[in-house]
Image (tube, rainbow, N blue to C red; front, side):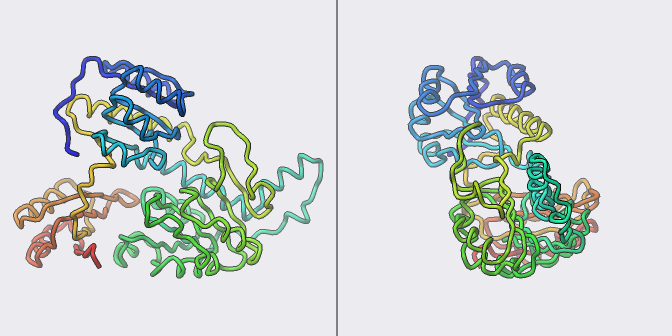
Length: 412
């Protein structure tokens, strides 16, 4: 897939098939497009509406978008108004030339806040406190037992935006943080002020709490299996606000009983797909698990941010034909190396890096720049199509605002 010519469709139709903020609907209409808002569509009714409206763009949250829906209409872009996009058949969209885009990072603070809430709830047994009092039962003696968060160790698996937001909050609680991520290096860990685990089992052994923040991919599906939970400390707490499929839930349930553990889960097997429904799964009566209703991103702040990002994506697509945050244009599939640049957060620093790479004939595939707390320093991760020469790295370091630069082989 390649970017199309500028769209500039006078009568572009946007089908919003989920609950969506008023500000987002108004923002889309202000672009001069036709907006069809049907928040209760799913299954056959959604497929029928996609075809009948001849919509150009489909906006969804948690609604499942299948191959027949995509193939039966004239869609050119599907926007997931959120971060994950596992409910969309991305392969089917790619086969028929339909872009799929998302809104990464806009719910990071909300999810990090819920992860903190689940940690505290598990430590202080807050839900059980409330339930007992509502029954008219006072049990200060039974509930006056908690270890607290201060001075304890939080292990974070995944160092995307949510993981980084959680680090800030954990440090505010006075916690030690150990992380595991495929891209983090010892220098970066030191810069952020966290410890680095060599693997997820190592992280489990060190942690009083473990919180998972990875996207669902073939590599992460089922990654937290029996061996991982066997490595967790007795009496520790496991938090998952990412995707249910990244863990072996049977292994988790076994560990909860055998190791006197607690768990806080916003995602789990068998959760209803709609806004309301009935849950009859094995966690319903498990006193060692506190489950929330897949609400990690559900704050007014995050949803307004997602709505604004959705409007930005449509605006950019309408006027340029380019799709921000596109997930099925795999520019980095030929990337061979990751260049990690630690630098001052100043104008012109990255321009210097790119100029050096250009002069060396090194093509940039993808880039993410992580600004650290205080907005004084940042870490750029740049995927390239070949290894930069020692001379190129030396030239990059000549800039006085660059602290260090390294190149990591993605094949190693």
